[in-house]
Length: 269
Ligand SMILES: Nc1ncnc2c1ncn2[C@@H]1O[C@H](COP(=O)(O)OP(=O)(O)OP(=O)(O)O)[C@@H](O)[C@H]1O
Image 1 (cartoon, helix red, strand yellow):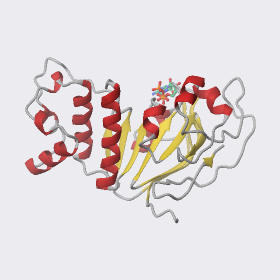
Image 2 (cartoon, protein in one colour):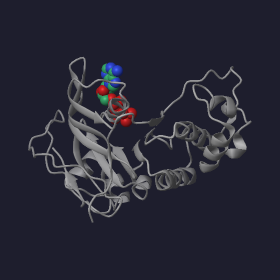
Image 3 (cartoon, helix red, strand yellow):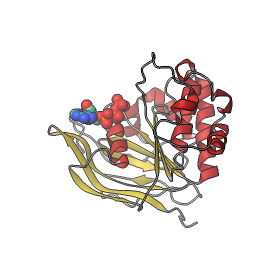
Image 4 (cartoon, helix red, strand yellow):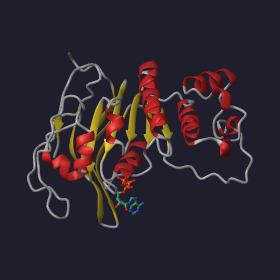
């Protein structure tokens, strides 16, 4: 089946350095509408840096970025610093920097299952409620691309599964592209279309159901994760030296979302 997704953003050979330290090395990828792409990788792998490049908050040291003209991006950050002494209802929080009309507010809160929270204090929300309200805030921009930095942080296990289902239903209803960072390989696998395994460079990427298991993945994420993660295996087609640099290199083919059933595993340099 041909891949019918539209490109929202493309990165070509993007590298980012901080004080001569490489955070991203020659990352090439495409994000598409109607597709959930999940970034996984160990701490310090460059996931947040990559998200910040996508958001346009960091200029790459080298490489090219193409964005669909006038691309609307909704962003849900990992953490939000709000002074707890400042009284803040959910309603007020959702009006900071935004001008939603009451119908939009009701519809969007309804979509994330948080309509009953409108008059609640933002500070008193549970972990799961907070994430739903944050998601609603990102959705109020009517995004073509939704960027979620660890969207289930601070949420219990049941709540995490529900949130991932909610994110998948948002993709279905809005046909928007979604880029998210997750540390929970096991939970995220059932609700993602495309996985990118990042360790400064893209180690590999593909559909979780199509990629095959590789010992290098176990080396990167540990045996415990790899076992829990039986669905997601991949052709990690190279080795790393002691500094994390690639020993064996391969060209990087075109990236693709396989939400419609097309495409498969895509190995990367
Ligand atoms: N503004 C910055 N200035 C200097 N170094 C930075 C900056 N931002 C990130 N880094 C460094 O870049 C590397 C990648 O960081 P990044 O936050 O992107 O990783 P991550 O994969 O999101 O990690 P985690 O899973 O721990 O959140 C780290 O070594 C980090 O210290």
